[in-house]
Length: 563
Image (cartoon, rainbow, N blue to C red):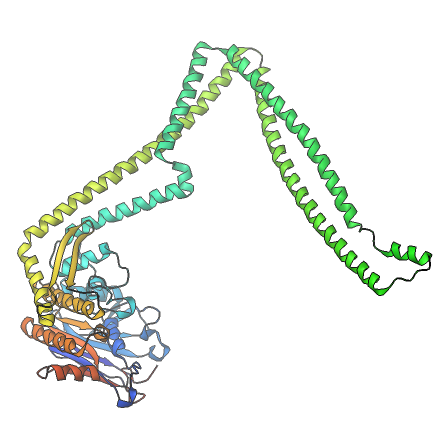
């Protein structure tokens, strides 16, 4: 059980816990109205989590410079006796357990053994993965779903902790996880093979088959030529190809001459435009010579004509420049094509000019060697694709086998499963009576054991919150009974934000009764008005106030100062 929460800050609000129901109360002054300025309820829970060796991410209170040198301690029952855990903001990777200073990993290992019976071997979950269900962190989405401790947590990642806490087969979960991770890696690799450079290297099975068949046909034709040595046929074939290439080369050269002439004309036109066009001064000269004075209106007209002329010239220049760029690109493309065609023609001419059939025979041998190398590469790539597909089929088969094994395991544990289901349904009945039927089912799925806690009509925030409350209480009781969990459970006040006073009173009463019956300790934080309203609904409720905070004074918060 938790015993005491302390800190060395002058006005820190220490907490002292007892067995049963414990409430950290945040007193609200009458003039606070609807204001909910923070006094430390959530920080109270996060500080407990910090002392249970959580990571300290950006935004955590212990990251504040005001708390950097503060020292906090938590005394709790560990391995049959009291132990004190001390951490500071100065060295977030260090923990002092009683008088021994150690690194975070070792402290987690000792807490895992002392609180959950985790030995650190086999397929047991980590300490932090299980304690996260006992001290949920609202800032990472710990209250979004009963089965998740942070937002968008993968179902496969929840399996080791939930299976362990509910006394199920963690070895089966480990096998499911291995298959799932392998399948995920394979899918990611296949995706990369289709979309990236790797895909250009491997290719798709159907495409590879087509390429292999085409090369095999080419190879058979070459092999037949070599066997019968039909050099004459190959000579005629090469000669025809040379003639075709020569015609294409002449056509491209002729077209290039025309294109280059057009480019020169465009260059000349652009140059003339750059020299500027005729102005309207010559018109003035004509009128001056006949002694006629131009009116102002005509002068303005000349200016408008000048602007219009400049606009036309600018548009013409842009068009000519664009046409020049297009023709330049066309010329570059045709020159590259011309180079390729000329290279191919030169290679064929070399064959045609070879002195005798021996050179032709050697060239055929070289070509068949190239095809053999290409075939070997394609066949190896096809084999890799086949192995992928076979692995995928094997994983699907293995996943189906494990689903059957999990189903059989649930059947073998049916009495245990029924006890869990009855425990959950009984808790929900204490809250809602027969108005909302409730069930906690555990099903066999590809991802392992699927936990489905439901309370009839659980679409509203208050019902969802109570479903999580019942799930956590059921988990804590079950884990303690099978020796896989501690004897405390902590909930942030956010769990009750959307729950009316009547249900809050019933939930606290249920927690108190369960603690008394099962030897547990339940810790939560509430505003004083919420607690008072719950006590009016249930006068017999007698919670232990483990800590008190207030918004009345600047030093009334958990840490003794407002931030």
